Length: 63
Image (tube, rainbow, N blue to C red; front, side):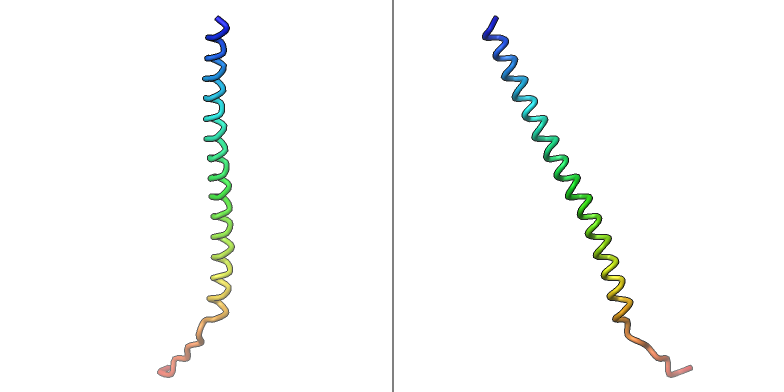
């Protein structure tokens, strides 16, 4: 009986370890996704600002 309890305990520990690893990977990926969205938004703002500053002035001579 004692040996069977040890096996169950080991398999439970293995499952808990697998679940913990998967949850950790999920949290890391979610954090990276959030950071990527924030970085992309910030980069879009910078790009917009640079484009607004560096727009060539066009003068229409035909009017």
